[in-house]
Length: 194
Image 1 (cartoon, rainbow, N blue to C red):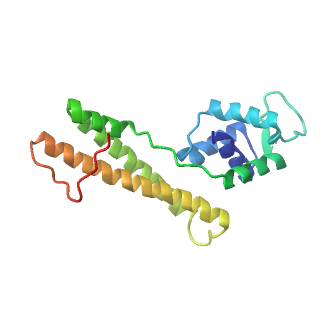
Image 2: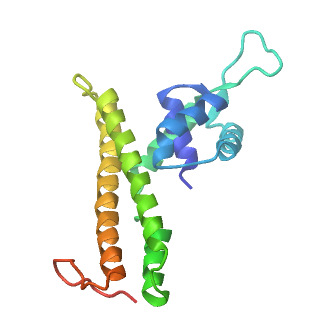
């Protein structure tokens, strides 16, 4: 499970309270490793118990005050070990791709609207990623950390562009099928799996 490593990464970037961490996840790491606030708080407790992080000492403890966490040397070492670890890619699960495959068996009626909805969502996500890139990665951002964070953002941008292209092609195919036209697809024949 990668959530503890995502939390260690975020805390090494900036010590944070649980609430601050969940907000930061919503704006960055959560784009490619989504987690609920409950999962993040639960994992913070486990990391603290294991000695990977600690709550920073508070000058005047008051009831309801947020704990701020920092990564301890053991947590940094664990994260560095995980970064260097070999791991095979995981298969992608995509419910819309499965629905398109199922439509080949039961018919595609009603699927056009869902493809349009997904297309709008991916276009909005691409616009958000592009805005982040323009805001956060302008001139003078050439540190190793910036370059690697930008590389991750570029992956998100490229994936959204791919999804948009794929969904636009799906829209054309569905429209052609609804109109009883032959496929407008060009290129090599796809291989049939299973």
